[in-house]
Length: 284
Ligand code: NDP
Image (cartoon, rainbow, N blue to C red; front, side, top):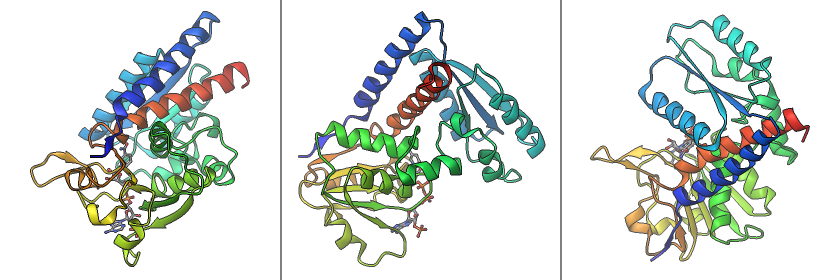
């Protein structure tokens, strides 16, 4: 039986460390703020935003929520982003994606000040991640790295396979594994012999969006298996890209869904916001 990686516990520790730092900053009269902007009433986005607000409260950040109607124009949204860019109380700006169809994610993200872009989606931050000179790491891949670290696994020299090449998970994930000297393979929907490629991995990260696609024959005995996927199974129950029941005997370490990567994403958002706040208010 694999060791189950407890994302809730690891994320709780990350948030507790942040809370203590925030408390110490408050004693110096410094407060850290995160602005969260949501446009429209997508139910999943509403839940994510609520969880982000809760996390802000737990670590002691000021949170500023802007809930805009679905028919908000690009001009109106850009005006808000501009206002937040210039508001010194706001250290981080998060625009919840996806935006309604008439709004272009790229235009909005490109207008967030890179030093307040705590999602690390702005091209400047993406470029910095590429060259290894970054302040912020993209939240989900950074959370995955924390989970791998929690297993005591040294990434250096390991065969790492990432399934998925999206800009928000797969590609930055591969880059972070590379920065830690993993030997990295990025796979995608056109990859041939995916099973065989995955079965070489000492560390396998699945970010596909296909319920329970990764079965035991995709994994090497004893591998670290990290499941980023958030899908619904045939009964409408939340599940990952990895068939947990099938893989749990063979893997060395495995994340559950829920309770694995999910809680880490918000914890890393808090970490990025703290980093931004310290840069703005302490110059470091
Ligand atoms: P995308 O849909 O943007 O990317 C999916 C990737 O998987 C693509 O690169 C695609 O390949 C690849 N893919 C699709 N089908 C196959 C296949 N049969 N074999 C191999 N590769 C395949 O998804 P995201 O990266 O945004 O998200 C991935 C999953 O992670 C989703 O379930 C999402 O909900 C979840 N997620 C979870 C988060 C968390 O906090 N836990 C945060 C973000 C995402 P190609 O490029 O060729 O199309």
